[in-house]
Length: 174
Image (cartoon, rainbow, N blue to C red; front, side, top):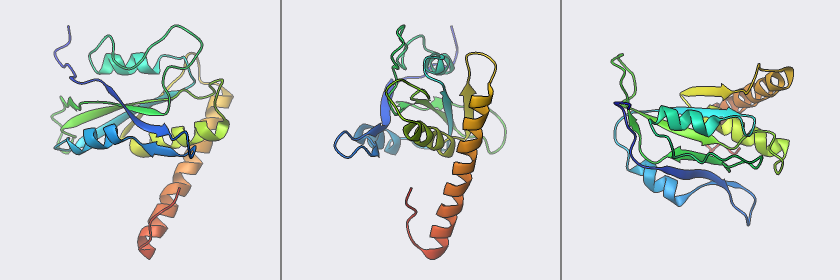
């Protein structure tokens, strides 16, 4: 088997609060993240629902099971989940993170979500990640390129808005 094994299990990270319909960081994720010591690189995987994002992350974690993988047309992942323990980095490159944290995202274009929800999840995945993987079942089509372009533009606007807020001493609102 693999030499590098990840302990822990997936933890809900960013979820929809049913009462407010806002995206919130779960208490379990807050506790998990506060327990990490050392530098962390974040690897997020995003793409259309039911294309194997969770499977890829399980492989990166050195596990057959962990992030939910199912055989139906219903999406398994809701919001953003994180692997409950960072994976020791094997890199000897100066400045490389001590650990890698894996993020699994809700699939885009799922049957029960809006484009707005998809854009928020996609943007958060890009903003939170050091390494971003866009998973596609086949060749990346024009719709996927449009979506990547939109999210890239949104991400730039969010970073610009956050930088302006820092200069003014206020907190950025998303």
